[in-house]
Amino acid sequence: MRHIVNLCMIVVSLMSFVGCAVEDAGSRSTEPMAKIMWRTSKSHIAIVSSAIEDVVHANELLNIADEQKRAEYMGRYFDGATSFSEITNGFVITKLMGDSRISWVVTTNGHAFGQGDWTVEFQSGNGYTMVVRPNNGEYRAIMSFDYGSQRGSSDIYFSYSLVDGEMLGYPDVVSSIIGDIKVTVYESNASTPLCVDTEITERLTISEYNGLMSGQLNVDCIDKYYDAHDKLTVLIPLFKNYIELVCYGDSYQLFNERKLSW
Image (spheres, rainbow, N blue to C red):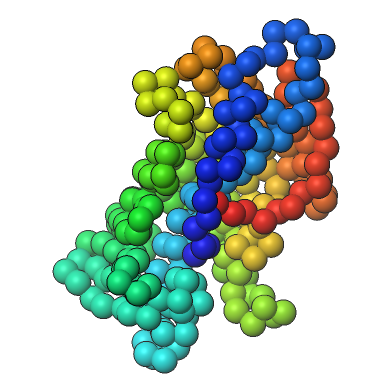
């Protein structure tokens, strides 16, 4: 579970560059726009990836019988949460922050993970609802989320493994995801919003500890105010320390920071 950070700066920056499509490739540099489109898409990937890690850790937590070990695991992976309680058809993980309450409500419907639908609702000032169901040896996660001016949905197929992290002292979740993430930004005008669609075209490998490892995706930004449509392709080579952004035929290499945050 990652800490929630404010996405407003990304949104403002994105709307400063997207919305004036490059009709003449020589009219202006595409690099600033490509970088901001990538940062924005990456923040949306982080939201989905974090939710997938939440459900993996919720399953692991459920299988820990020792109360002390369960409390330690819950504190580590659920942002300092201190309460675990069973409810009808599931359980709730809760963190108290003064007078505020943050909860992960997990509905299992009596199924073991991977044997039927699980629903995870992250309830805070911002939140998400994700339904996870088994799908031909892996999982399908259908998700909706709302973070300030950004409202999104995703349809993702994923698999995962728990890798022993000897140097970490605890397991690392390594997931492989493919699918679509669609986000609408209502920052400036509710009637003419900015739409950011991320299509993962080659599975993204994401380590909870090491971050974004490999994959490929396309990003579409559709600005209904300016009637503009900008496109970006992102290539993340395995075992390389860079990513490649391709926008309007221009190619840029950036250092792969790997870390995902939102």
